Image (tube, rainbow, N blue to C red; front, side, top):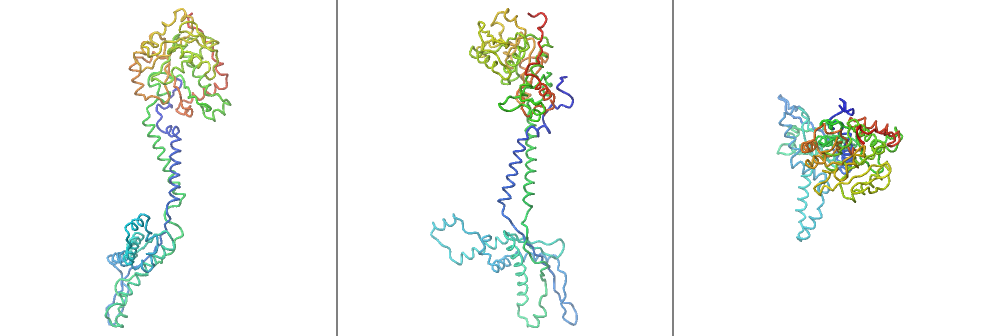
Length: 522
């Protein structure tokens, strides 16, 4: 088993690692939810509810020689009847008239601009009586929506709630409703063709209403406090962000850990961070612990050193560097590997496809790569270029579009020249280019596979292996390339971060030991 993998290392990034990896998404959801909550608390109109309690009871005549009126219990039907009386149109109309609610803009909104424009274009002006009647109907409908009448439990008490935008107005309307109910009951008792003495004795018989609790102006608006609303929206943002992160990682089938590489039967040799200008590939805390500013190059050097040791252990003289999918950075890794081997006092040849201009550009790019230095390339004759100094030589093969590509790379220089090299690094086509890859890998002793972090999905990589016809025994190992700079050491591969920290304390590429040529090679 690979030294990079133990039983605690996950083979998937789904779970808590998803939340760490997609923290920006979660933070964005939290920020958006907090902004929406703050906007809601600012734009939400304040509303105040005032309540009054009415007790429904019955006055009845007790049998006996004298006319005695006593208080009796009202039944459920009578309580419901009183509730409907409060909701009735007649009661609401009396409240509107008593409190002059037709002049209140909350109950009778002013005409909109479009309504005024339509009235002006039609050239009609409503009559005063019709306009008053319309305001009356609008105020009644608005008041009906603003009140709530309900029975309190199983008692004979009716609770009347009035909700408006002003606390004083809510209390005024609630008390107005109770006054209208009492006044209506008193007027009903005084009507009729009874004698004054009989009316006085029978006054109040039947259901009556008593104001138990008059309405008071509320001191707090309805609903939860603003801070509670904002906290609730923040928590909702956390939940939504976490759900999105888990969902995205559940659908993510790309390679993101060494354990996933092992599923293909390959050993993960190391990780190469994604280089970004002015941005380290390891966390600032790790940089502070190491006291170094070149951890990306240090981690690259450590990975290439391990790859060089793996090549020597496999006794491979001709090494192919290929990727499963085109665009995973196999050519760049091959250039760095050739530079690494050349720095260890070995004669190295890099075989790369492309025309003469491409070869010169590649050689210049190698000589100017981070942590490398070398002279300008000089032609040795034909397609072979000498990079000068202690860098590798470069062999150019025809570009892939010519039909030959890297298939017969050894035919572009004589065998005597090839025999002079201790290590030959060949840039191979991607595995998904099955026939082209098989032709180019005919004379290869071992293959170093480059897999991009978060690149192709595993199903596509499996198809690439099938098309290439390569077996796990054909590979020296695999390198995880272009790893997210924030994810070093966060997917169970803590050794990558530790190796980068150790390598940062040494000279860049300085400790690379000279590797002796394979026995029998010249």
